[in-house]
Image (cartoon, helix red, strand yellow):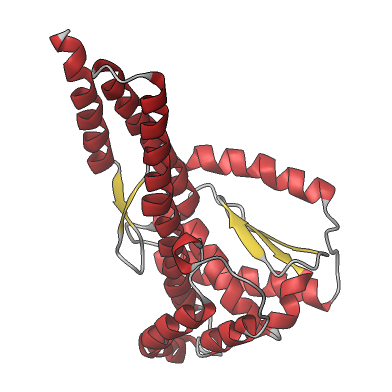
Length: 274
């Protein structure tokens, strides 16, 4: 019985050790992140999902907006790879095969999967307004891939599930009935979601804003356009969830953060503008 009681402590200790062992650093921001999986696993899984999206969507083939998305994507991804070349972060783009697609859909959205698969929806193009506006969004989405945020989120989920199982073992060993166990597990799940997973989503968005600002500057796009883009996004209006339950910072907060980062980004831009 004593050995059984020690199991939860062993589980938690192993997870803590694994978290320390799995930490790595992100370029530009320098933040340490937690990743359990090889990025190649995420790239393979993302490719399957990416193909499924393209098979069921109306992908634009040709036209000025499609050409713009591809032009901006190729320019920023090339600048980023050149920036990372010869540094300890060069392996961050290992196995990447960049693709930039425009889908005919009114959603005001864009995303990037692991491995460099970037999709814009036509609904976001009026908000982008021009090529520099596209660069704001493109830099942000490419930053998600370079920072390997998808891997980090999956790793967090794996760790939380493991710790959750440890919590359940503790309740069993302490003689809790089924109702009490369910209450404890529900409370743990809520605390994990609100206390960790969603804040990390907001952290990822803010981090991608910062990295994206530098990425667009490296490619010779004026980063001063970034706060203006979020001003246009803010003008779209619509209801938003409460800030503490949102996975994205408010447009106003993003503008403030970007304005603080702008002087450093402008220095980079002035060295790379065309």
